[in-house]
Length: 71
Image (cartoon, rainbow, N blue to C red; front, side):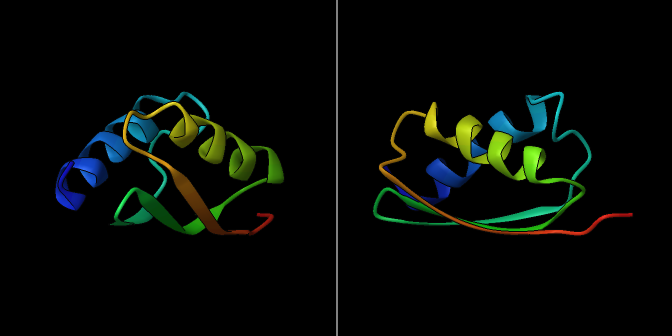
């Protein structure tokens, strides 16, 4: 799978998650590895982002660099 396609699949999965809707998350893909960056409001959202990506076909590894910012 091409990296661009993997990013598109991952972005769609995150956008469909009720826990992560409307979050501005940045994604990169390199040979099955997804790198996730951005800010979320809780550790729960950070974990849910990772679990959501784990279910995407083609994702072999996840680097979760999300920052939790309590507002």
